[in-house]
Amino acid sequence: MDTTEYTPAQASAVANLPLPAVHKLIERRLIRPRRLRTGRSIQRMLSRGQVLYLRLEAEGVRFRGRRVDMKAWMMNLSHFVL
Image (cartoon, rainbow, N blue to C red; front, side, top):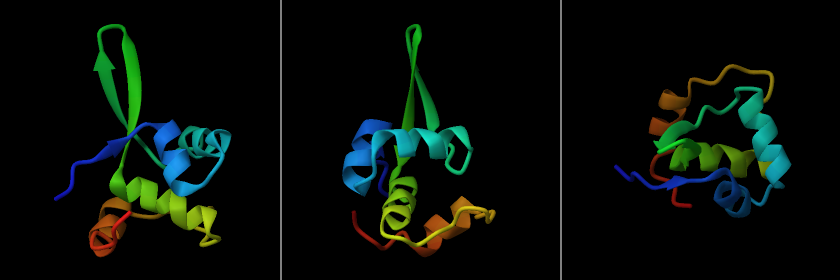
């Protein structure tokens, strides 16, 4: 399994979405990034599946307003390459 993680800025570049849109999806809890604590700072890290979700959002596949089981969804789409 690929353990690559992305910051919100990296994810916005890969998904071709503006950074404020990525932050809005995080704030609305449509994606829940892992929090990485280094000293006093906390960095949010998005998984490969979450970035794929962002990319699909950017391309027009809408998941908003629907509850998506991210683990099951990522398992079904884990063969896609970013």
